[in-house]
Image (tube, rainbow, N blue to C red; front, top):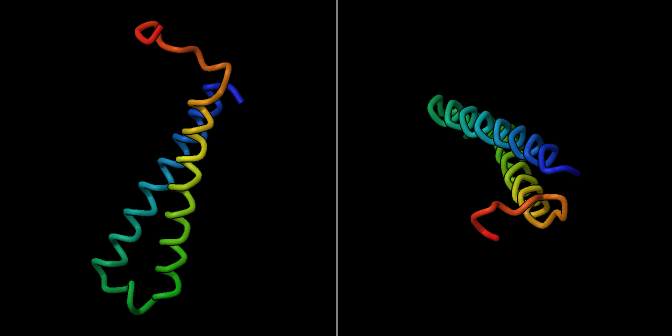
Amino acid sequence: MTQGEYQYVIDELDRMIIDSRALMERFEAAGMEEKMARDYQLLEDNLVRALKEQRRYTLAMLEAEDVPMPASMT
């Protein structure tokens, strides 16, 4: 993958993380995390999965050979 492709995936995962957190906050504000505990747990599981994937892609991007090092670091 190119740096741009990695960044695209990371950005999409970031959007998913932000949306998931916002939905979880709405669940909590309405007291639905107890009434719909299974659904809330699925939201939490998806959030954790997205965070792990974002970390994995970020590390892969940083280790990729085709990523040029900034001039300030050379």
